[in-house]
Length: 397
Image 1 (cartoon, one colour):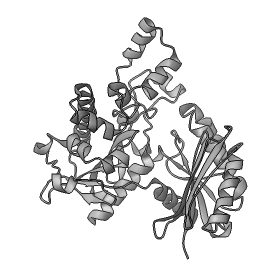
Image 2: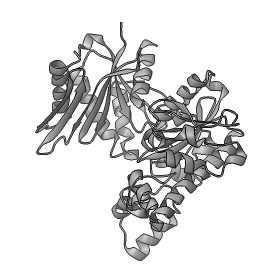
Image 3: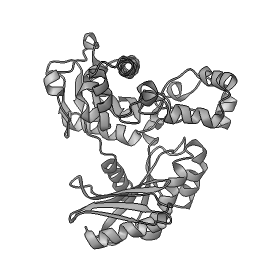
C-alpha cells in the first residue's frame, strides 16, 4: 500500500500543493492556487487526467482548500483522507524552538505565531494554510516542517552575531538560515548516490535560484550557512543584495532620507542581479554578456565572486571537502554558472569537466573528472519529497 502525503506550502495569497507517494518518490498531482482574496483568483491542477485551470474569486485560504479538494475529486487522483498518512506543511521560520518536524497542535500553532516577527511575510500565511487544511482533513495528522530546522546544529560561533548579547537575546537576533529542507535533501541524496553513509561526508551545498544560499554540511549536519536572521544575508540573489556593510543603510537613512520600509524594499526587491544589471533571469544575463554588455558582465563576476568566497570559507571551516553539490533552478539548469562559480579553484582539487557539465540536469549527475579530489555534482532538489519523508518519519515514530 502506498504512503501518501499531501504537502502544503501556503503563502499570503497562495496555496502550493503536491500529493507525494513517499514509497515511489512520485508526485501524483501538483497544483497552485494564487491571487487568493483578489477580485479574480486562479487555480492550476496537474493530475493523471491532465491539467485544469480555473479563474474565479477565491475569498480566503479555506475557500482555496475547498477548491483544491474539488479538483482532486473531479480530475484525480482520488483523495480519500483514510489513505493519507499525513499532511505536511512547509513553515519558513522555526526559530530556536524547533529542531525538527513537529506534530501540529494548538501549542505548535501558538509557537509558529509567536515566531511571526522573524518571518512576517511567511509564518502568518503558513498558519492560514494550516488552519484551512486542518478543516479539510480533521482526522489526518498534520506536520510542520521548518526551513530553519536543519540549521539548528550550527555551533554558537556560527550562529552568534557580534552585537550586544542582551539586545540579541531580547529580540532573538542570531543566524537561523533558510532552505534547510533543500540542503538536507541534497546532502542525503549525495550520500545515497555515492554509496556512502552521510556521516562520512563533508559537503558544500550551493542552492542557487532566485533566492540562493550555501551550506557547509559535516557528517549530515549543517555547521555553517550563508543566510542569517533572514534570507537576505549571504549570496547575491535575483533581487536581494546578500552581504552588505550595515553602515550603508545608516548612510542612506542620514544622507538620502530613506525610511526603514524603503531600505527593506531596496535590499529585498531592488538589489541583487536586478540592481546590478537589470536582469533576474540568468538567461538574459548570459545573452547580455554575450552581446558585450560590460555592466552585466561585472554583475556576473560579482555573483561568482560571492559564491567562491563562501566555498573557500566553508572549506576552511570543514577542514576538507568531499563534495560540492549544485541544486535549485540555476544550480540545476545553468551550466555557465556552474562552470564560472568554481573556475580558478582547481588547485584546491575542485574541477568541473566541461563535457559532463554541459546542459540542464534533470537527474543527479557528476560533473567533475573521475580522479578529482572533490566530487562536484548536480542534484535536483525535491523539497516536497523531503517534507513528505519527514512527515511520515514523525507520524510513524
